[in-house]
Each structure stands twice: as structure tokens, then as C-alpha cells.
Length: 417
Image (cartoon, rainbow, N blue to C red):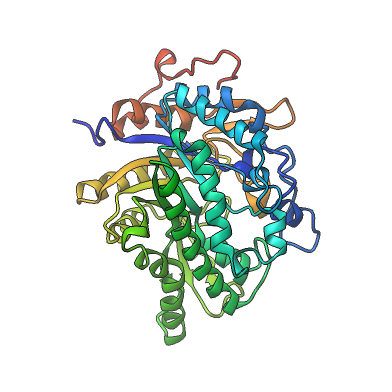
């Protein structure tokens, strides 16, 4: 008896700026190099995935993955307004062809946090024609790469783009303005609709949105906490899910879940730290596996098929990652048993990489990367554990004792633990 069907999608996720290296023409590169921002270090060379994508995809296929989520870098493809790079589009055509050749189903994100420098300079998501500009970009990508993109995600975590960039100042453009926070959220929803229409006009891809859905709760049972909790729940969860209606909502929905969060108007960032004794990650995030089940049920109310497009833990102790996988995959299996239509699980992340303002310190990867020694890739025990689940569809396979022939990737150039 298996816990997941044979056609379930198993894999992991990356984003261009976090792994490629050398994305110097976007707003994040500027943010990283401004000492006045929250960024701790530069993305630099990333993990050199721009040149090593072929061997990386072969490694992931050898680890039992049958799907992979990645993004295309807007600033490479459209380095100036309306000017599209044939070389960049050709590069991503080679990338997606390599992914297909390894038998991995592609989930291609069009916007994963980074904006071209020229677009950011004219207002980014607050520009009056932001949705139209994103639609133009989406149409060009779909027209050129659509035959290699079975799944397209328009925007990664629009709520976090708005929250981190316009209210918390933690991401570009580094603003702390509640009015602009809400306006950015509205613009991102409009851009999603524009992206859906553009992709459908140019390609047969199944198009959707990826939303991060933390399990929110008031920090205390008082009126101020409850009021702010209602506001934050609306602005982070309900606004985005309740607007996914009608023909332009998309064909599927990506759910990204990491943590439970406590809302507190007395906290400087409006979120209180987890209560004492709560298990936390390197990021300080509260580990709460059942929150994944609960938020899948919430997302299911949209009526769209679901894919978990991100879920993972930042830790230097890989035994914690194996336990995180065990508890969160069990929550996912329970949601499916309760009738939620979840069709895949893409772990964050495939590789240890650049974690935005936190730099390279947090370790989210199934595969370690030694940036000081030619970016050598080393699969962690958690990578092999997830491989056993992917190959068998059985949750209990996660804790099986590894066998060298079953678990070892086929790539001789990759070091193994």
C-alpha cells in the first residue's frame, strides 16, 4: 500500500538569482551592494548553476526526482525595455531542453523576486503600466519557450514581494509604507492575470500562481492582537486566494509553506518571535508540520488543483531535515486522504544557495555546495531519503536504511556522503 500515487510529482525547486550567479542587471544586485540595506552579502557567482545546469539536472534525476521548479531571469531576457535577448532566450531553451531530456517535468517561474534594473527604476510594481509590462515579458517567454514549459508559475509569492519590499523594507525596494504595501499587492494580482492571459495566448502551458501561506495566529488573546491578526490574514492569505476566481485565475495553484507565525502589534516587525521551547530553524521560523495540512485545506477552497511548490527547512543538521520531511510529508499525505487535490511536492531547495538578504548562511538544500572548492555538489542523507519516498510512494521508505545501489546517484563526478 502506497501513500502517494504513481503519477505524483516529486522534485525540488530553485530560482535563477539564487543559483545562477552573475545576475548583475537586476534590483537585487543593487540591493545586495548597498550597505544601507538589510542584505548581508552579494549573490556573486551563486552556485554557478548557469554553467552547470546539465550536471545538476542529471544529479536530481538520479535522486529520484521527476519534476523540477526553476525560474528564468527577467533581467537577462529583457535587459532594456522591449529589448529581448536572443542569447538569453537561447540559453533558457537549452536549460529546459536539458531538463526535459532528464525526464523532469518543468515548472517555470516567470518572476521570482528579481526585477530588471530599468523596470525597478521606473517604479517596479507601482508603475502604472506594471501589469502590461509583465504581460509583454510573459508573452515573449511563452512564445519562445512554451513547448518546453508544461507548467508556468507567473509570480512567486506575491504576498512576500509586497510584505518584504513595501512594508518591512527587508527586500527591494526597501520601503516601509503600509499604503504602498497594499497597492503593490493589488498590482501583483493584476500582473498575475496579465501573465495568465499572455501565456495562454502564446502556449499550451498550464499556468498558475505560487503563494506562501504561513499559519498565522494572534500572539495574545487581546483586541489589538486579534485586530492585527485579521488584517494580516487578509493581506497575506485571503486577498490572494479569494481573488483566484474566474477564467483568469489560472489552471493550478502552488502552495508554499514553512512556518507558524504569531502576529503582534507590539513587535517592531508586527510578528512576535516563536514562544519559548518552540522548535525553530536557522531562520528562526517555528516548525509546525500540521500547518501544511491546514493551509492546503485553505488553498483547496479556490477549487484549483494544488502542488506544493516550496517546503523545507534551513538547518546545518541534516537529521533535522529528514525529520522535517517525515512530519511534513505525513501532513501532506493526511491532507490528500482528507480529499485535498494535491498533485506534487517540490522541496525547497535542491541546493544550498543564496538566501536573499540572509546570504549564504541558511542551508536549505538537499545537496550541499562547496563554494570554496569548485562548487562541488554533495548530496546529503536527506536527498537520498526523499529519493526513496519518490521511488516507492511510501512514507516509511524515508527512514529505510540506505542501500548503496538504490540510493547512489549515477554521476561519478559528484562527491557523495
